[in-house]
Length: 489
Image 1: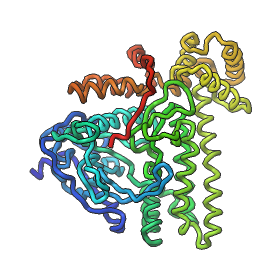
Image 2: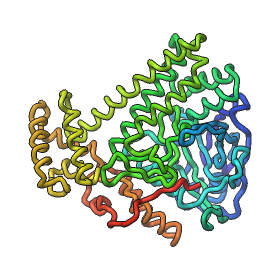
Image 3: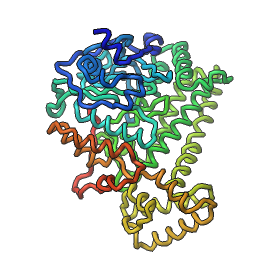
Image 4: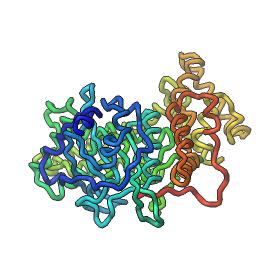
């Protein structure tokens, strides 16, 4: 039996389990009745050094379901806190268990976490379980984000449990295996700052630096450097979200990673019609996490991270606050630079001119005015099929198009190079909300995974611009009700 588990390729280290005990509780998953594998990520498994075929047999599925602990693993639930819609709470892994850290053949380290494996000491009255639909949703969206070249946690597998979960209605249970650079969060630091000691905070910060930012270990003030590095990562990440119209939906501080990866795909969705006020999450009544607010919320979250680090930044609190404030001021500049660079690329622009920002804003304002589809507008510009956008024929767009063409003519790169840059920067397909729902309904209601498989295949090559992708570019049918997403808890 042990031999079969070893053959799966698990190669665990457990550095997080060697941190102060206040940061976690050792805890095993709760076994499930009759696990069944419904989706395995072959390419990801291989890159992790895992034997895909070994994961598909009974012993491998038992690991993915939490029924068997693989050799070398040290299961634990992580403690953390977080501001949820602005309100501070003690949280922790209420329905997730970290098996350990897989060391890949290339020497890389990745967290292997089960999502939905039963109650933990941090469950706060919840059942610790997850439903099939939300777990498949996270699989689809996280893998689509990876294909879009956006830093993200990834999905290794989904298994059904053979047990129901009880929400508004009875749903089939499932467990997702999530892979992450780490699950260190802004909320992890908030937790230690609130309930731990300064020594524990320093241990956590040193661990984080060693794991994610070893380049700053020798810096004179490595904790200030840590803050600055996280700000850089998040400025880049949020810009990438905005450039593809991704709306996270629940940007609480416990859902902001220190590594700069996107995490938690509960109520997330992609924007169809361009509108900065777009909100999909059913619980975001005030629009706190609307598309247009994501950069400012990121700054707010990073300020909470900076507050947690204050005792390490400088022994004088006033000086520590000044260092933190100066570092935070860089976010807006970094974000804007990343966003402008990305928007220039979406318009085929290689160099910089002062008027570029107004050219971009004029286009976005037109898209808002005429309720243009965000992705398809850039797709039409990429293919020079202007008639495919609702902007076509308006005086504003005609004038804007002339300005854009004049702008392109002022750069040394050829028109062919510009067109290629646009194809590389404007995805032909995104996880359209109606397509995701279609795939989930077929899988959950009918046990038909073919719709999801085809969608995943299309989403795996978003910049391929193949004829086969055309049907996945179509908009949803008109509806009297706005599209709503749910946390999936």
